Image (cartoon, rainbow, N blue to C red; front, side, top):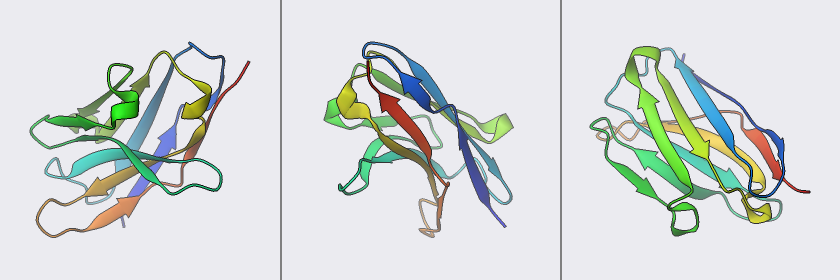
Length: 117
């Protein structure tokens, strides 16, 4: 049984920073691609950032230069450092783990990020 548990969300003022964490338990190996998605009210879930097993990263244009994704394979944890936050970053942020060959897909329960003054 695989579980992904996000933490680190909260309320922050515009221009502030937050760091999200997602800890994986169960049969998640370092081969999995790890990603962060977000979903704002009334909108679809969108990809924010991905990091491969080899450390290659990819970001949505809207967060490039502000967000940084990283992973610690020894801890089975993926992080999302979010700087210069904007109100439009407000959303529920979800962690995702996907096997690059089998396509097996796992989701966390989500953590709320609210950017507001």
